[in-house]
Every structure is written in structure tokens, then in C-alpha cells.
Image (cartoon, rainbow, N blue to C red; front, side, top):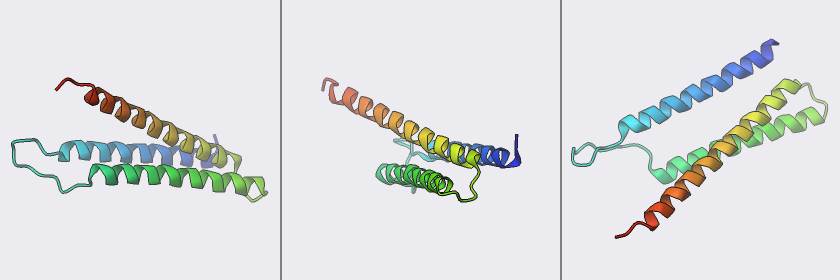
Length: 113
């Protein structure tokens, strides 16, 4: 395994660990009804917007790497492939989250009052 791909793998693992820590902080920071604890965190809409912007940024980086490689610039193929996989994984995760949110909304919508 070459050093570039090892560094990229470590970078991806670092991002995953960062996302897990952010998710855990979000779970720990939520307010519990009736306790008087409040959250000064980001609202749901801002969190969704930020996540979509991150996915878009990942896709734009992947596209830039691919275009640079196609134009013959000095970009390792491993960087291009890893970038494409990162953007694909981010998009698939976003799509799955969207599907879960829509399913939850439909379940709530069909609850008897």
C-alpha cells in the first residue's frame, strides 16, 4: 500500500470519528422535557442544510480531482478513486437518512389522533 492511499484512508477515518463525536455531542446536548435544560445548539433545519453542504462539497472535490486527472495533471489515481468513493458514500448516507425521515413523517401522519 502506498503512503498516499494510507494517508487518505486515515483522513477518511478521521472524518468518520469526527462525525461520530459530533453526533454523540448532539445526543448529549439535547434537552429533556420537564428538566428545564435547554440547548443552545443548531436547529434541525441548519443541521440538515450543513450536512447537505458538506455532501455537496465532497462531490465538488471529487469532481475537481477527476477533472484534474482527466486533463493529465499530476493527481494520483488512488486519490481520484478515494474521492469518488467518499462522495458516493456521503450521498448514499444522505439518501438513506432522507428515506428514514420521510418514513417517520409518514408514520406520524398516519397516527390516529
